[in-house]
Image (tube, rainbow, N blue to C red; front, side, top):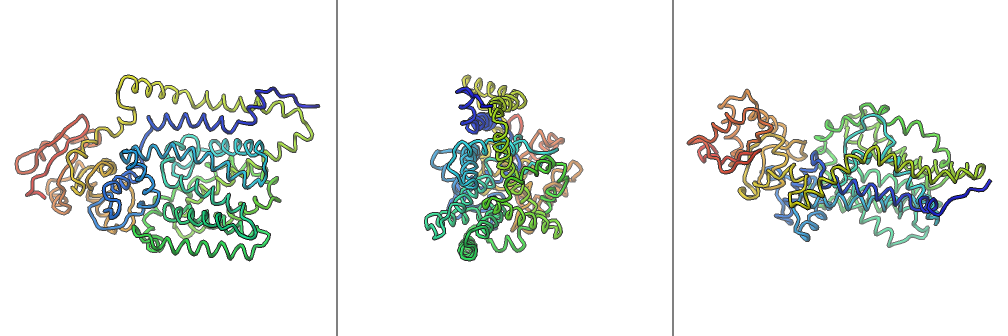
Length: 520
C-alpha cells in the first residue's frame, strides 16, 4: 500500500524542525522582555558591567577586594564587546545574547546530528533534529533540575544567556568537526577545534570535560585510533597549557581546591535522579538501533566516561562533577532521537502507509505545545506590545528598574551594604557589596562576610552588632529594600538621624542612605 501525502504534508515533514524552532523563538523573545532574571544571571551581569568599565585590568566585580573571579572569561569579554558596540547595559547585553544563543543552539544541534548521521540526507537530518529537540524539551520526569545546562521547556529561556549554554553550542560544533576530520588530518578543522577548546575551557570548565571526553572517544572509534588519539591528546594538552596562561583567574588553583566552594551548592545533582529522568530510562530500548554505528559508538563511550565522572563526584563528595548529568541526558536524548527515527524508517518498509500519518503527527505535536504552554506566552506578548505602543517600559524593566539609581549616585568602588538578595543585583549597576548570594572561589573569608551581612539585616540584631559590622567593612552607603526588610522603617529612622547618615534618594522600593564619615 503506497503512502499518499499532500504538498502541505511534505512541507511539514521537510521543515518540521524549522517550524518548531520558530515557535520556540517566539517564546524566547517574549520571555526576554517579560522573563525573570535571577540566579547566576546577576553575577554574570556584574562581570560584564565591570569589564565595560575597565576591560583590561578589571577589579573583582562584586566585592571591594583584590581577588580573581572565575566568570571573567572569554564569554564575558564576548558579551562585553557586543554591549560596548551596541551601547547596551550589561543586563540588556546578556538578554540579547540569550536570544542569539538560542538561534545558535538550533543550528548547532542540527549540525551535530548531521555529523553523527554522516549522510547528506537533509530530510533525515531535519526529522532526527525535530525529534531530538522535542526530547530535549519534554523528555523529563518530575521537577527536573533548574540549573544551567538543562534545556527543558520551562528552563530554556532562563539558561540561554549563560556561558554554559554558549559552550555547549561550541562543543556541538567542535564535536561535529571531530566526526568530519579526514584521516590525513585537516589543519583548518583542528585549528577550529583547538580555538573552541580553549574558549570552552576558560568559559565553563565542566563543559570542557564533556568536550574533551567526546574528542577522545571519537579518536578511539576512528579507523586509525592510535594516531588519532595521539593527535587529540596533544591538542588537549596544548589547550590546557594555553588555559593556564589566562591572566584573570588561575585555572590550576580553581581545579586543585579553589573550586571546592561550589560542591555543596551542586549536591542536588544526586537527588531524585530516577524521578527526574525516568522517561529517558523508559525509552532506552530505542538505542538498540544505534549501537552498531561508529559515530554513535563515540557518543556511547563519552556517556560512559561522563557516568564515571558523575559517580566520582558522588563518592568523593565533589558534587560539582554531578553537573555532567546534564550532558549525559543531552547525549542520550539525541541518540534516542536517532534510534527512534531509525525504527520509524524500518517500520515504513513494512507499513508504508504510516508515512501518511507523519504530517498529522507533526501538526498534533505543534498544536499540543501551543495549546498547553503558549496561552500565558501569548498573553505576555500582548502586554509587551501594549507597553511598546504606549511608550511604557518593557515588563522586564519592572524587575530591576528601581535599582538603576545606583549608577547615578555611586562611584565604581563605593562600598554598599544591603540585604543579601539586593546585594546580588547592585554590582550590575555600580558599586561593590559586602557579600554575594552564591559561593565565590578565591575569597576565603566569604562565609564570614555572608554571616556578617545576614546578621546586620537580622530583625533581632542590636545596634552594637550592626556598628561592629559597619566598622569592619566601612560601607559608604546603605541601601534598604522595603520589600525584603520587614523593619525597614525603624532601620531608616535610625540611619537617617544626625551623626549617623542622611537619605540621598528614595523610590517606592529602595532608600539610599549616605552614612556619616564617623561611622565608616
